[in-house]
Length: 416
Ligand SMILES: Nc1ncnc2c1ncn2[C@@H]1O[C@H](COP(=O)(O)OP(=O)(O)O)[C@@H](O)[C@H]1O
Ligand SMILES: Cc1ncc(C[n+]2csc(CCOP(=O)(O)OP(=O)(O)O)c2C)c(N)n1
Ligand SMILES: [Mg+2]
View 1 (cartoon, rainbow, N blue to C red):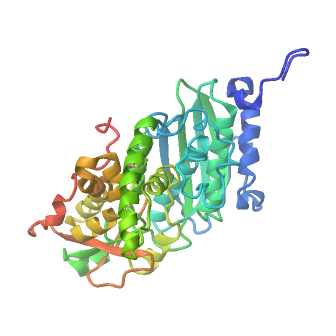
View 2 (view 1 turned 90 degrees about the horizontal axis):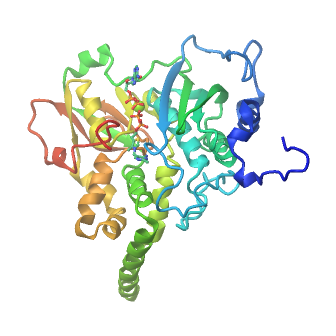
View 3 (view 1 turned 135 degrees about the horizontal axis):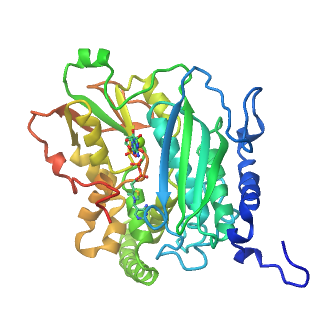
């Protein structure tokens, strides 16, 4: 409220401290009302606004998962590569286009950061875990702590990003059912999501006992849905100081134009300019796109075990293997092929070891939220998946593939 005779704070400079909890909730709920399932609360269920929500569990069980994101650990308010000012511009209008806010590949900072990206990612990574069990998202809760100095535009963007991910990732049955607000020195965004299995068994990390009896420790095919390495490449782009990034991209573009001229003379075409690659990679980090529905497709195609890739393909494939007493061998050709499109960007950022950097992004980079599944050897690969390696008996000779990239992958407590 503005006292008589004082000038109201311009919207761009308003902070949540001036709004109070009810004002903040009004802003959040306005955005959450844009989720398609929001208007549809079946008889006997209760939506946001009461002490707790009441939801239905159509088949008597539901999937539930949670993920917390902390400021400067999982996201930034101002990424170095995004010009100051634009990073906190997060009204959702510029960022929430039907394609998830891509600006057509131009890397000028517009529409890439701010609250929208954080909201989108918080929803996407939870949906990915639901997907990895073979489920479909049904509900979402948001627990948000932040300093009173947080711009109102940032939380409006956050809420728009959550709602945007629900809409654009195709979580058509998902309602935002409530949450909690708290104050702290830095922002933490904790999202909990629920999902439905529609009567199907969940696909777990471990093979079901019946499948174990049949496969009896035999090798399995390892398949992946979605890309690998792009979010890690995007993190490298976003974490590079703006001026350094511009300079490196400019140098790489100079070399590219020379090459293009030569190739044009030979009638060849270059498909990706390095600046466009940088923009696509940044978008992959800020707007990850788990393929919702792929988990169900894999389940119905007979996937024996499944998990999503949050911490890196090598690390997560290793977890899938270990859970079944097996070892993961990635196909080195797959890593090379997957890395090849990222090599020009890796070379621009790190001229000395572009190839190796790109292969590290692919094998050890997290946050692309692809789906890994184990299938009986030679089984038909489900639509949207491709074979990227094998799960083999621990005692087998290690393939060259096991040494691809760093054995690393993300760890919240050692990667700092
Ligand atoms: N603080 C915690 N308390 C209890 N269980 C936890 C906690 N943190 C993680 N877990 C469990 O450990 C497993 C792995 O966690 P995490 O790596 O965060 O999973 P994901 O990568 O699928 O999000 C999950 O089953 C998760 O529920
Ligand atoms: C500022 C910043 N630093 C580092 C990272 C990289 N990073 C943060 S979390 C993560 C891995 C995924 O972790 P999490 O979301 O906790 O997935 P979980 O394993 O819990 O599903 C990575 C690679 C980032 N996104 N932002
Ligand atoms: Mg997971």
